[in-house]
Length: 154
Image (cartoon, rainbow, N blue to C red):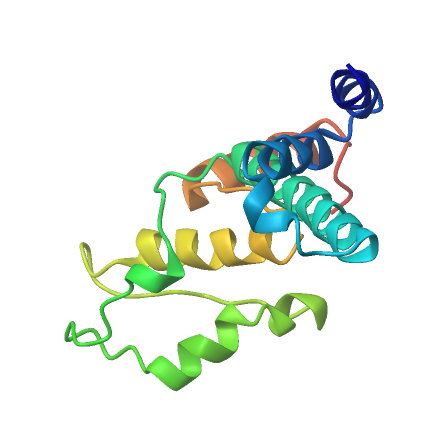
């Protein structure tokens, strides 16, 4: 009865990660019996932090409206498009965003520009940054309209 109430309280406090972690600990007592109170509490707090981080990344990716679900781990550096792994690894760190720099990806049709852009956006979301995907033509159209009606001073 006590465990059920604790789980209800955790969920009502929106500590879903901790509630899930406690349920797991209760379901597998032999795994966690040898741990002390502080260690078990630390596991629950870690679980809550991970749950919140995962929810944040999921929310950021949904808001980004990316055209492709591209993962940095899936990049094929052997493809003959001149992509250097060390250079792209630096871009994946997202330091260029924090330094207010830009990245322009150019190349012929079908070389993977959209894919690489979505990879960079996905990685930025993983770093907790907000991004938004626009095709260049649509972005320029939106800027022209905003400039025309005075929302974007030129």
